[in-house]
Image (cartoon, rainbow, N blue to C red):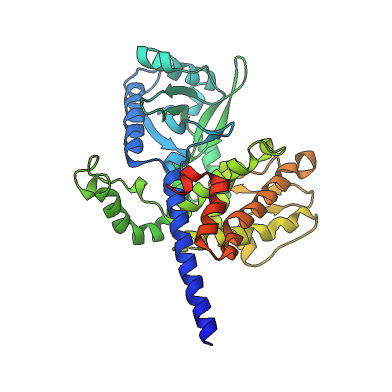
Length: 395
């Protein structure tokens, strides 16, 4: 009995130490408070410049807001060719225009022309991309930003009504927008999106744990960044991170590291799939290790779907994680637009993207969950250093 009791104590202590290692790892992957403030200054200035422009038919204020990982608090510095690159920030520019009163081509052009009217921004402007205009910031500390500006208009009344008909709440559906999509030279189309609705969905999931953690975290951030913040109230909510957000940050970097140079690198899971599935699987766990462990356990079970005809019921079905229809097509629905399927290409090339996803889940289990079996903090740290880099793990 005494031996069992001692083993339990060691296990609890080991898990606590491992959680600290994971927390430190996530913090190193995260954008720093000073860099966050710099990013806010950059995109606020650009947003103000665009908002102050004149656009045909526009009456009322433009809505400028962030989307993606920066908005969700899951941003990490991307890896490109094995080296850390600049931060990617997505900025939505929503013009108060009726969708039928303009075209995606004219909308895209009008925002591009306004950006070019600023001499500094014109020098930083990259060539036109499929859905956005990109400004490249080279900062003195060597850590720059790629600011993607997405022109958009509110979605049509008909499509919003269709979303509501498919079970999306009116409040979420009303936030839908249409963004421009450059298919080829001089050919543009509309593409539906809902970054505000998705952010609200994600916020609802993390909110209960966020409320429990925000006071302690804000105090810690304030104490360690007094050169930036004069009082604790100045610390923005966006710098408070729940285990869900930390888990997503670690999972995204793990994906980048594991697939770097791999034959399946082009088929690695996209960040939207990692974020959506992690959020759906999250059960308000309060520590990082348990969060990652439970996400991985739920997703690894679904690997059986690689065998056609497998059906799940109960909790896994209720979570709406991954499904496969009778024709073998994979389904990961966008939580704020059921018509959009994040896994719409998983069936291609013999389910190559699906196989890459489940191989990655196996790697996550080996590298981040089963690692506790080493039963030694030193060995665990050394193993993580080999995967994520000594600079990040041991800092």
